[in-house]
Length: 293
Image (tube, rainbow, N blue to C red; front, side, top):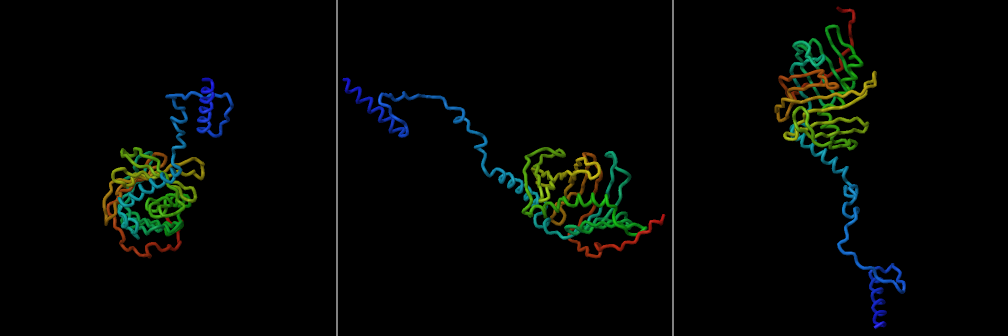
């Protein structure tokens, strides 16, 4: 009987050693009794959330952002939107002070050639015009022509760099552009996708895309005031879309600065690819008589 017990102990230890070859087998050790229905440890029951995050999560976020913007381009007209060369708009513009419109507005004609040629003619006879060629600006009145005021020109160039068509036609295809999907939110009483783009110069712009129509509802960007060094937020709102020559066009455009309305435009007519010609965008001769009254 005693020999049988010794044999049984040796066999048991040998079995335990086979299950765990790295373990030592002391001569008189006994195999531990198995633990049944032991609770799982916290680490095994709830893995580290970071370990569950896919390694390509940032790429997935950027892909989602680009897909939303691609759908926005299709909603705006797809190829027709991406390839129009020039445009003519006519409408009425209003300036604002303390969120109140000033006067009855000014009639204007806007001539535009993608990406950086623009001419505004104000009043019915075009008595006052402003021409932008690249980063240069020229103002013509009954007194003559001069270079645009530096501060006004700087504000224009800041907005032009993040113009909606420039973003969707230029930034979208630039390999240096970074894309971020910021989720859904509500703006201007509409549910929208919030997408941020960042260019190679770390200039950021956020687009708010309607979740139903995929048309842009708003654009916003921040910059530091060169004089006060305060952070300024500018917004541009798009409303009253109509289809013109296959391109969805906002006929009401509102501009805000730090939440206050600063300008508003109401379009009356829009024509794409009218063949404006280069003469309207020629650099005007500088001749200005400051003595005229």
